Length: 161
Image (tube, rainbow, N blue to C red; front, side, top):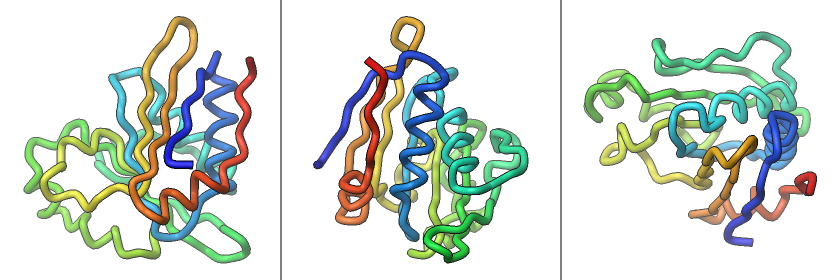
């Protein structure tokens, strides 16, 4: 499956998608989240991290630009790094901060506002597009690599109709 689309009726639907994504994760994934302010990027990431086993608070790294988390995937410790590039002034800030080194094939990198670092950001394995639609959200997941395709093929999610 190259892409997946769904309508998420409410926050519970967003949380369920995050949990389903957590079960489909693999080391090395680069996941880019697209959508306007309030579209649910951080809510989806929070749900994913909690479902992957992170018990603590998950805050948007709006001011720190990145927050690392350690989770267990199939009994193996994996770093998940959550980036929020909204406040970044230029792509060079991404390079100057050393963030490119986090995309090392072992970490899972989740990036909000990837367009802020587009020319220097490594390619995404999975792009997720979120859009407010009525009381819920429309979501589209699109694989752009073999690793992203593998993730989508493992995804087991059926939204409430």
